[in-house]
Image 1 (cartoon, rainbow over the protein chains, first blue to last red):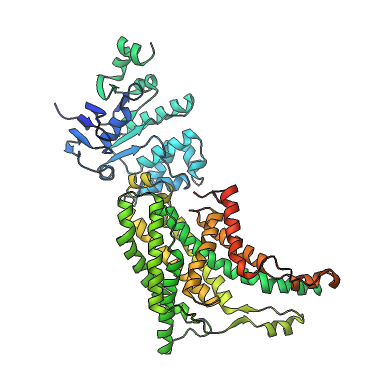
Image 2: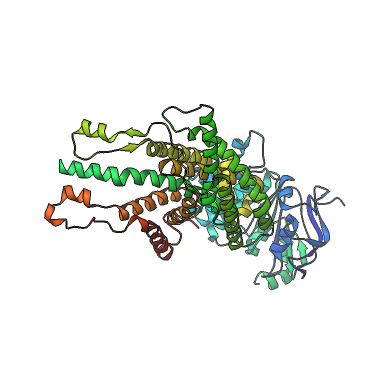
Length: 237
Length: 334
């Protein structure tokens, strides 16, 4: 079987001497949405950071489009086409919305940056309205849009989101999920860690339930939602 | 007429000197605040960087004069400035390479970098003494006054003279040009924006592909340029003594902290606040008051809150008050 577009294969490792991930596998296909859910402390964010190269792996490999990128730094992975939206501190608060987007495109040298900014304004119309406002003055949901927009500025092939809906209202959350589906439809693969497991699995092509740093259940989002054991243990009935 | 005379005395003894001194402090504080914003430590060596750069500007000025080059009515030192900046920038980049980079790579706590900068300060202090000595140097030349006191008196018919030294005028004009250029650079250019982004959120800047080494280098070069310009303007306006530049560190830090460390706008505001506070507290107000109040109200005193010897106390007091009541400064720094 051909490799998925992005795969963290049998990842084992942690920040210090103690392993947090144990033979954990996460992957996402082109243009699809993969969601990592699980209880607190299950290593969801750690798994995503491992895929992005933010911790050292003692075992396993990360491959993007067939290429082994296990040894690359996060910055080098950005150049390979991976976009990452951290959970917190994910915008330049003192800079305007438009400057945030410009900084997102810092590694690009082509002259179509303007076009990408316009595309992002089409995706998030509110950002166009607030383009000259300092990003730190925006509401929680709008800040997340800036964060996602900044990551999209490199025109990545994979977008990784660490709890994009943390701390935003349910209405804003639905709105954000809609936008994420739209992004996936343009052919960008989405890998996302989510606290709101139920809503996230609804839009997921593939879901990963992690427990203590290992894969517990892996299936399509729908199948996981239907699985009585997953429902009982992780979705509250 | 008395009110006008009082106003002219105020301009002559408070406003003009305060404006010039404030501009010099603002340029110094801008350098401190930029280093703090990007490299995240308070650079104690900034005062001696000013002394170092000014020493070279003086050497170049002498050399130019010996060759018969001058800038006409303007001080020759302005021609020497770029050369002084080049030498200082090279030295400061060397310091970063030899000293600060080591601690940066070890991700040392800011306080360690501060102490390291105190070490650099002593080294630069010694170097400056070896290069140009500890004596006072006067290197101002060109026209002495933009506005002669006698000419003003004849023109206005007032009893009070108003003098504007050309060095004060040069200071204000050069400072305005520098500030405008710096803000244009920070707000409009890609490199300037990347500096602000790096200062705002280092991790995200790295994720966005901003090269930290380049940001650090550009910051040092700009800070060195600002330090040399501030030092030269101060030396032209007053006089050059290396030790004075070391003591300038206090009002410069007070200015940067009052405005909010890391905020360029705050550094400028802070510079003028500190300068005017010092001048207002140490000015003998008897002259101004003499025009406004009846003679028998005046008494014998000079109406001077503090002797000029104590002007550091003013910056110190403001520094402490700001740190207690609004530690992030006026413009919400760090």
